[in-house]
Length: 511
Ligand code: BG6
Image (cartoon, rainbow, N blue to C red; front, top):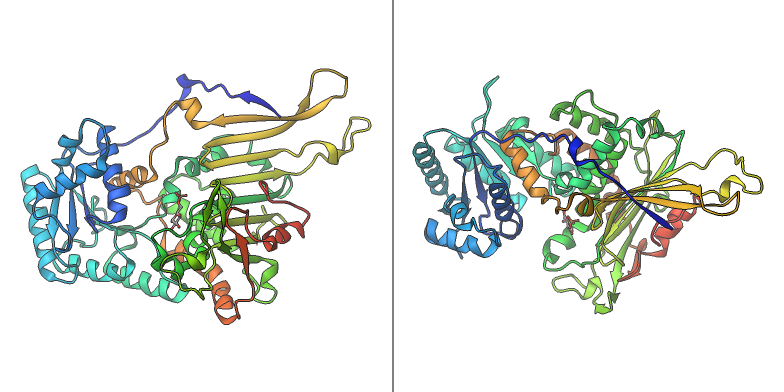
């Protein structure tokens, strides 16, 4: 295959970035994994890029156990996770700490006092963002605690800078529990105060799906069942369950990856353009799309969905244990670590186009991509070259670890008159822009400070995704587990997943 390098005109870029009005971030789970690995480093990056408001501050709330005693101790700890940058000292000055148990009213009183003292010292009232980096069982408890001291007061009409609450998945275990949790949150907060994170939506390459589709005139006319044959979405991971056995064995791949990331990517690929990129309209379009996905028929579900679980194998030359041997996993567990599914979108644009989605742990490689296969030319004008011998146009949106786009075309090769061959135009973010794209949490934290809900999951969207997957989960629970296919760690998943796509005459891209 030949390679073209794409030229990018750096003069013609158009960047719009807003700096938020005064804001503060209160992190419950102030020394949890997410805070250490993502939230503090992302806030620090925003600081270094001068994207935080001038008078920004953050407060870590953590229980007394294993907690520092003063702001100074908390700052000292934070140094461990901020990485290099030269500005650690100045940034850490913005960090504060409140100790206390989440079920103790005194914690919220202390927090309210601290917020009021800091706001007074800063001379302005910022938007308060409460980030719940804790398991969902704590959500209602914490929000009630905040609300009891008036920290999450609902927003009067027309008022901006209202307090908001950011929550992390899992948003329920099934449709019923997701609805119960959503209604509990809605009882305490307005919809425009609830920011549900899906970190995939913060990835540059995922956001680029919308830019590519709706900021160019050349793709949209082809983006339908007339020109597209099928689409594959792959999010494969080479890591196993790691230290998250307790969570993962209860969740499984369908809840962990499909209920959120996979369906979100699918909806970005397939949604209709909103008239304007504005949170409510954009989320409404995604919701409409999710509603248009054909429900899975419980009878013969194997034709549509395959689940698997990894066995011992080898990844990059190293032996790895099977799922049932992993620490903390029940040795009789029926939890799936892999899912492949065929999805149909029953609307005018997509009728008849199959979408194949797969995701799993301990697979051969870490790859996230969307592969759009265009239909073949209807007729070949080249003598002795039938249309099926011409390369099928393929557009690949690389989400990670490759970050870019590639387009495969058929083209003339030098030499004989009728000499054709595949060419791939490749665009790679890092090479072209010479920078590492920002962490998804940077974008999402910034948007939360800006009060922009576009990249967060709405209650409607959440429930629509659960509605689709709930019958599948029920089917698996009620079944005898016979449909759980084993696959070797380091493979591309179980054979049944290959059969799923092969039945329609297609193949997974990398298998
Ligand atoms: C998380 C899942 O939401 O996404 C993890 O809980 C998964 O199981 C992770 O590993 C993948 O995210 P990324 O950004 O590494 O692709």
